[in-house]
Length: 330
Image 1 (cartoon, one colour):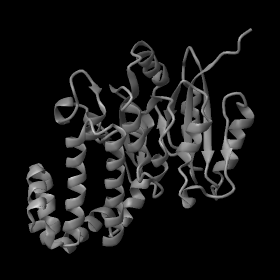
Image 2 (spheres, rainbow, N blue to C red; image 1 turned 30 degrees about the horizontal axis):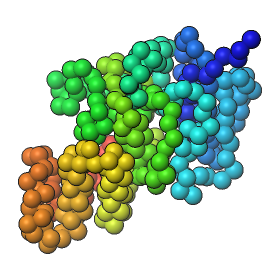
Image 3 (tube, helix red, strand yellow; image 1 turned 60 degrees about the vertical axis):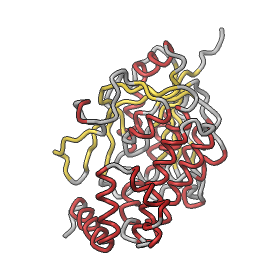
């Protein structure tokens, strides 16, 4: 009898998520599907009980859960754990969920795979997600507004090419399902592996959005990449370094797509370049090249740029106050 092939590889990266990892694993195991799936959990040398919990699940579901236990933290060595899980995956499709997030719909995988199987040109599928603020559990907020009219870039047919997806921007990582591909070498150097993943995958076909909330994205845990970036925003040099890395990411995807969407990606790159110049109060903003770049910005970004240039210290001070209030600090 032919061994049943794995249709989906669920890739979960985790680090010090002992409070949350059970929610993630249980949400994977509750999936109702007519196909076989595997769960690849990458523990990045956690210093709490995360690895112990994963081990318990591995013992209970040895045919489904296939963990990677690191003795040294890979993130600190500049190695993307997500890439390690993608490389180990055996499925036709890859689904993503980090250890502090979880899925809320038992039919999530089936819904996404059904669409992709009947639309082979679709190489990336995503859906809405509820944002769970650990500092305010009563807050009702979603990644993509519940009413499409409130979200400028949501299309009526829900289909996106790589250019349109770059403009959409707000995509919950725990909603990703994509066709397994071989990632380019520059992926590991990307500042945002999730953004790089969605753009690279969509460049081979199109992305499809399912207008349904089927996962939870936690914030306020103090461990997310977003939380780390908020701390970096307090430092001009770190903020400049971060923006430069974003420029590199978009330059890479621009070249990767053979410059077919050159105008859109160059506009995005221009925005980051202007912000770098503004926070350093660079006089080059008066030069014709940058005046041309400023003209391309929308009103909202022009206002942000003006505030950064005229009141850089005030901008960062207000940003810090806002972040501290969100984290319950005075």
